Image (cartoon, rainbow, N blue to C red; front, side, top):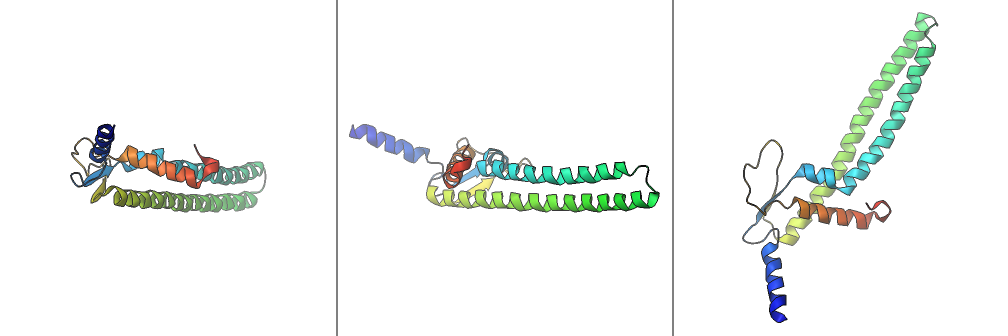
Length: 163
């Protein structure tokens, strides 16, 4: 029995994502963003806001169409109002998307930092599609492990929205 416990303990030490022998690991940021429950929740929040903004643009467009038989001056004023509003909505949407994305990235990065400290990683690199990691030995991709822990942490912090 003690031998089985010892072997299990050794296996855990060997399988540890980062350790003294393998202190450089990497994550796939795209995989984390796509699989992170917090990112999904923020995307849903953004979609609700975007829908409201689009409804307002559609309402102004409908008002403009209703003025098709009105004098040119009335139509021109409504067209300008619609264009200004549409530009403002685009800018607001872009700012909101950046704000939400930054919040999600801050959460992910904080978790990766915590994960690295707990697992004894010297470095955790991010592998992007532009190829900043050309080769990595099998077992150095910790994306799944990080994503699992990240989602578990999110779900504990947001029990009502657990996926």
